[in-house]
Length: 220
Image (cartoon, rainbow, N blue to C red):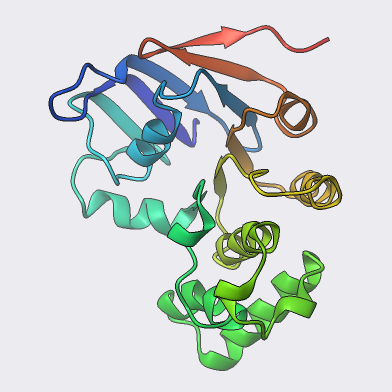
């Protein structure tokens, strides 16, 4: 069974030509898939459609075997699918790192003690414990990027959607991110302009161009 399935999905922003025009995609358990295409092709839009943040004009969105149409249908999706936004500042809004990472587990009904334990576990696994009590807005761009991943992993998602996760990362932190992602069991849908990163994390790719998705050959 596919975890995520888009069937001929179309979407246009008001007053503009469609950015998705019959796009179809399937992501199975444990699968890693890169989504490529030129700037403005609609890659981030497609991720937002999967999460129910944007509603398609036509086509079907199925997640975990169920068609998702209304806002209520996507509540479960957002609990089980983790989206790492392209801009960390869209995702980090608490005063400190520990509060940001604990926010998701607390919203899932965890006690404060349970949430703190999850925070410490996730930050330890990502080698980010030194950032635990830092003020979030004072972090570097690369540090914010890694903390956003921590906030998502704290929710124990079954699928990860990653939108340009190497933005603002230096070579050392990019290597750390690759190592982290390659230990994870989750299915991953990756948007990245970094061909080397894609090759190491999600070598199978589909290309979004003129609103439709086509398979790309695997890199040699």
